[in-house]
Length: 296
Length: 254
Image (tube, rainbow over all chains, first blue to last red; front, side, top):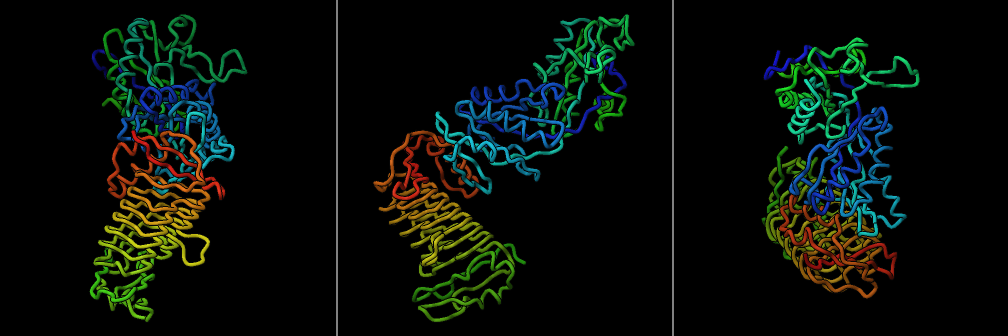
């Protein structure tokens, strides 16, 4: 299979089941909603080092938010359900509570698994906090120096998917980056999906464990590192001199598939030789995204 | 089972008609005949609901009342769920001690809406009441939880001794509103007279008011203007003669 002359490898991306929450942050204007979201999703690229993965799902117009102000939807993922509320309480408390004009709402209201995040944060109000029940949902009003911070008492948590990916094998670094940027642009605002890495792109894809250092749980993906082609069991084809990875997390498999479809198609452009994907032989992650099946 | 039970007033009461049996959650398990045979008091004398109303439909948590119910008292007393629409005015004690569900009155109502039974410590403890017209005295007295919205004017003592909950007032407010309020919120979109035991705190944009007003607009079709949704409100803390953890939020413009 090839698209625009770019070969699509007969392989699959292997992804994992994670726990995900959707946080809707609103602000007086898009700038302040985004400021809070950017801080909240900072240093949240991979559970390997950050213990969580997070990103901006999309910007929300005022008509789509509970308080009628511009907002941003954030997806926040962890590997297990115990760590999700802990991470959320810390992150929301330090980044959204502190940000001028923001309010914070649950983006998964119909999910039965509830995390008492707002309930935990309310104690910042030192006894001056007050709750309001509106339409069956409880909100906490926390007095702050600027005025009041409003947050829903609970947030929904559901199973999500982390680690969807594809690799862009390019003739050189410039063409690889252009293709990756085109893919990210195409996948931006896709519902139910985030790209947790900087600009949505990873240059340092990893393999599990280490060949040399026992303490390392992840090390460089030498099979796809062009500089190591001559000294390792390389999977870098002839004519490829740079490989970039796009990692996708999402609320469910179909959302990841839909985003991969548009992203890969956008990445198939001059200067790109092939599209591949990272997997562990299918033994670690239950979600397998077969590139050719997605693009058929 | 019907989609909606309709009670149409066929015999206008000459005296006060105490009909505290009318509640959608009670009707949800009853046949039309059983509903018609429920007891009421007319001028202090026992009677049947069917003596005054024609009952159409059965076994539904949705209820509609038709006719001039200005003399019918205690509708929705102790109601815990379901939805009730009153197509016209209703009498006093509407939704007294209500714990859940929704009441909408497409007209005015009498005294003590969402209030307490005589001598009771708590009034309304949950649910929502929307009055599209005016209300009499003592609306939301000793309210513990829930939402009471009055689009028209209200009489004296609104939210008196409120324990918690929210009252939204669109029209003029009589004297004594919020007196002895412990917690809870009175949102006043028009000018209101405040007890002297309230103290001004600040003027700000309370985020929950925007959420609340948008909810009312979407859920009940309440005509809320954007200037109220995004507006600034003066916050008055009180009643400082009581616990003082409540507030009056007075709209102060955009």
